[in-house]
Image (cartoon, rainbow, N blue to C red; front, top):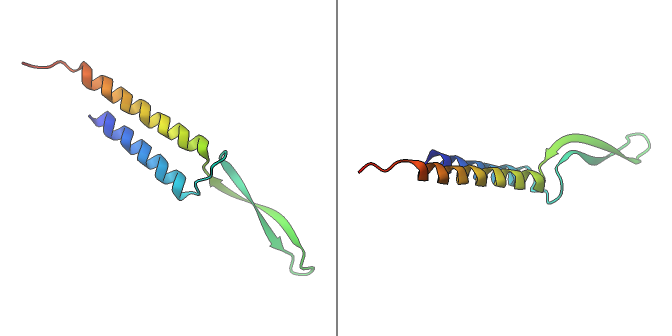
Amino acid sequence: MIWRYLGVFVITGTVLFWAQRGAHTGWTQTSHLTMKQDDVTGLDYPTYQKRLTPGLDVLVGGLLLGGVINLVGTFVARRRPVNH
């Protein structure tokens, strides 16, 4: 029974983490392009910020992990002997 709860917890946590951090529908990004403006010339120039935005690879991996844990919980529950 604990396996099923753990699987649901992993699935829920993965979806919430993915949604809260940006819900990116591509691959995971570890840096983001931002434009800053030079104070003297007024020209824009690109800079990169280190920031994690989980993509679909993280979402699918977490969902698969949670599903496997649920599947293990199903088989563990079936192997218990029934006392009469």
